[in-house]
Image (cartoon, rainbow, N blue to C red; front, side):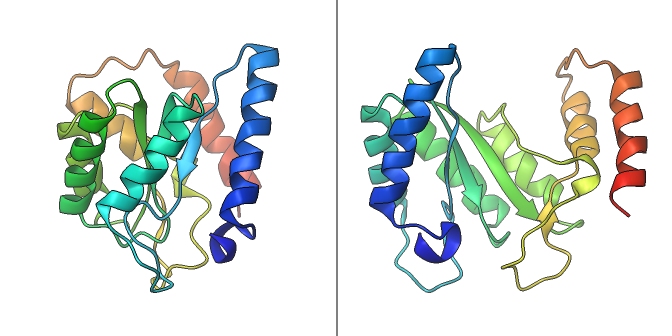
Length: 178
């Protein structure tokens, strides 16, 4: 936790409490990320029970939306599907999402694994901008929003997007992120 977010777990949990108070005052719902939900690059212990433990802790605090995060893009599609299915079944009152990092050639299998196991909340970034400075593969980064949109549309998911405005944003991003 310290190496990933520059804070310890107790401080992170206190931040979650502050976030919950702020959200309650403004009528918002917090989204909390479980970083390194699929393992970590530091050799620390990881297993599904650890993810379950921290999900339970967050659930008891009243968190209703959790994003399972593949911090460095090393999760396989099998891991994504298996963990998503298991954890969402154990905690049916929580809406789970996926924050995945991936290479350009492996994003779709990961997204498909999540989708086929019930995920309907995916993080992404226009053109995949941003990335993962801790990843060992320089091509590992955020999954492009355009790819998520195409995938979901191929699954006949109605997204209710203003495509004209979205592609305005895509074009603007090309001027901002050179």
